[in-house]
Picture 1 (tube, rainbow, N blue to C red):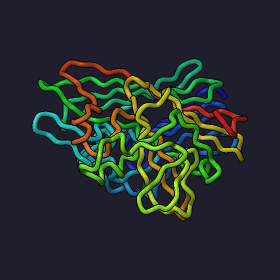
Picture 2 (picture 1 turned 120 degrees about the vertical axis):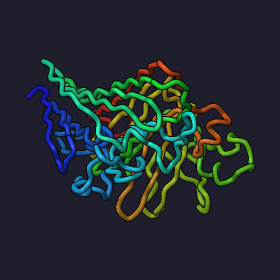
Picture 3 (picture 1 turned 60 degrees about the horizontal axis):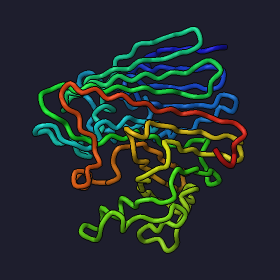
Picture 4 (picture 1 turned 180 degrees about the vertical axis):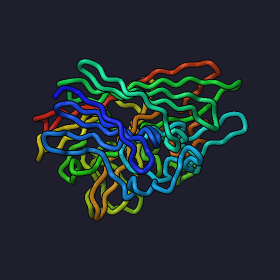
Length: 330
């Protein structure tokens, strides 16, 4: 069938569907240019999380008139570009209560249909800090990947300091307790434990082997090569501060299928991760980012953030790709 691209309006939001013979990607240009779905078509298997929020919850909202409050507001799951996550520009402070500005807005979009590719270019200018974002999602005929290129252009008359996270949450019918997380690191930083113990030691005091991580109030170590068991019933936030490469994958042995996330390691030198399990299923967040900490005060202290000056341009990329017959490794 080659590649196709389709735009439709759902509950007042522009939604773009890119697909080829193997994959289907759904981009919600009308809210944050969020990636809502990335489906392996032969099995109709979606690797991304769907939250309890649905598009119908937007039917009485007009994001052109009033944007959402933060990236947590009306989160649909999937993959959100949390930009900026935390930071400061002049007298503006970006915190958990108003962070992820890019996800709170409708983006303009342009469909690009090639001979052997389909793409959508999404653009937006942010409030709070003068940052223009230009992002293109592309699938190619015969390929199994979604490729994303992104450019930031800083305006204004002062520098901005901020953290930036590609917030990708994996779950759906792809992730279960048998899923294998192929990690690019041997050690992990327990960011929440560090944040809850101010003055309790240096960051390196909260680093553990990835296969023997102790969480507060839990009596045994956990191996992060697997999702947390459903009986865990909770969330944990950890960071792999020095991955060997910008590459991580999830393997589903039952489906003999893997999904691989690759990214620009120079721009995103850390891999942040949320592990969750409960009665509704299991989730693994794999989030390339520039910061290893849970609070911006530590980001400033240790220099784990991005600085952009007026007129500066930043180019980066990320990609998602399915791979068959790799149920045990990727």
